[in-house]
Length: 166
Image (tube, rainbow, N blue to C red; front, side):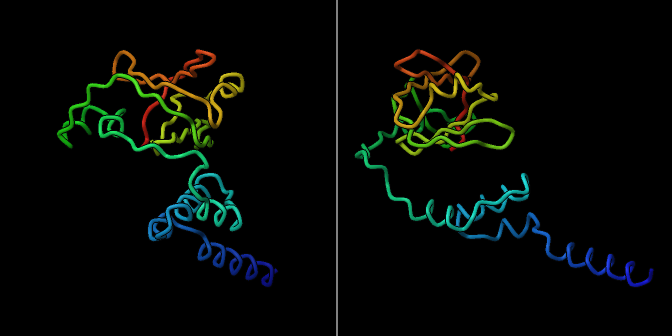
């Protein structure tokens, strides 16, 4: 009985020391590896090293990257961010293409655009709506009432509520 008790205590101590902590993730330099660490903390599942290497070495999209105007780069910032950066943005809509689609925690969906902006859906999307927002789809993001934003698929006119992440 003492041997079992001692084995359980020893195993639990090793388990506590081997556990990844929030501070450990914060100290990682690589953005992709740090994100994988946070994903592991929240979901308990981590991407394999092959997937991380593939993402890090991923080259730019095959489509030519068009230069982004200053007004377009600042589109979607909150009023607070605009005031802090002393930015005046008059544009009420943005035309772009989706370059990457990924799932975020909580079931929301993140969309990376060709201009490197990152947008996230405000709610969990049904598979029907999600099928309208795939990679290489032309979209328009326009300001909605009360400070929100709509992402609209130009071919099907389906719209979803989004917010800018970066």
